[in-house]
Image 1: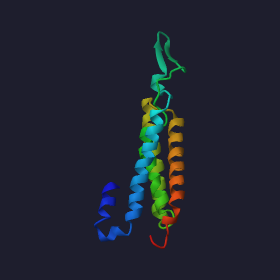
Image 2 (image 1 turned 90 degrees about the vertical axis):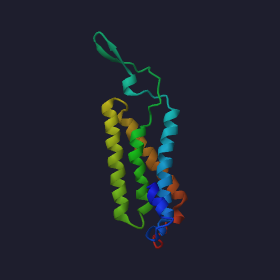
Image 3 (image 1 turned 45 degrees about the horizontal axis):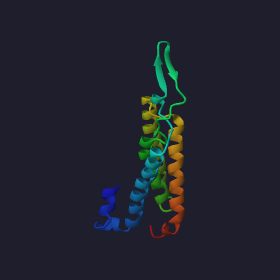
Image 4 (image 1 turned 135 degrees about the vertical axis):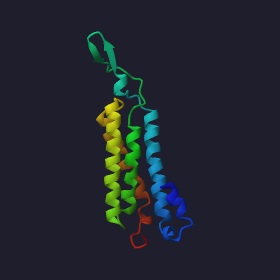
Length: 152
């Protein structure tokens, strides 16, 4: 996305999309930054930090507070592509739904990978998707007037 946005300053075919490509890049980056900030201030522990080995097996320790595990950082990279849905929603619906499907698929796939490792609960990844979608919705609403379908 970054390279495409930079190319939009020089390549004639992309110049008309300079603002949209910049929005796509910067809001995607900011989406993951928001998740990182929330994660750095979170006290939620990871599943792998909540188990203790005993002679009888593993026991859940629900008092574990060594956190920084919520929301899911890996899932945020996939969910950040939801920004493309908002960029192309009015002008190119097929591309918008491609970004919607791609963002949800990659977000859930990377989240699933982390759940299989014991790094996150399902709720961490669901909240990550919701936070990023809501963040995109708020930013889109602020810049809604820039998305004139007749210009795109």
